[in-house]
Length: 197
Image (cartoon, rainbow, N blue to C red; front, side, top):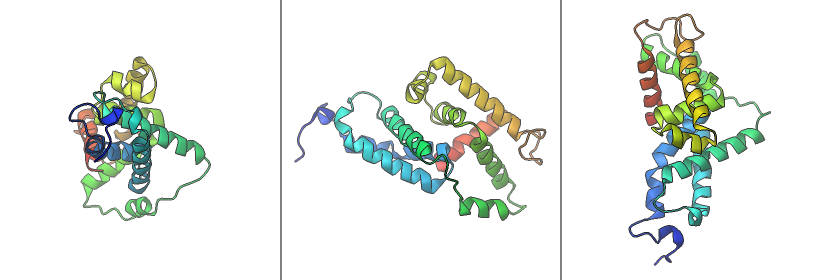
């Protein structure tokens, strides 16, 4: 029988269950931040370990998702600072880019979107992932990113505008992208990437 602690004292609250529930959201956020499934899994594992170690500091009744997103973001930023001078070669990504078949037009568009997302500044990519795909309000996203609400709104707007420019025919995105693809469809694609990795 596990001891009753501050973190599980609220009736019906089970830290382990709640942490397990938000795992897919954490994994999607991590993949969106770093762009690499293997690295994202490492980030999520580290964030889960830190969350478990800090479970006594979690306040039941508050948002477990927001709390863990802050932890994951801090793990990502710490790792990025530590590795800023190390270059990463992703053989899977290189293979995908070099061997993309012409008949896979939807795959190409998704690849274009992933590439465009990774060309955004880390702050804008994070903002778009939190608000656009993560479903957080501007206020919640600002709390997670430790910035003002106005700054978060600005980052999201600029990220959307940058994505739209990169994905347009006259931007640096795909040259064969149909004119009918709208800004909304691009964001829907982004949401699909985050949900399904």
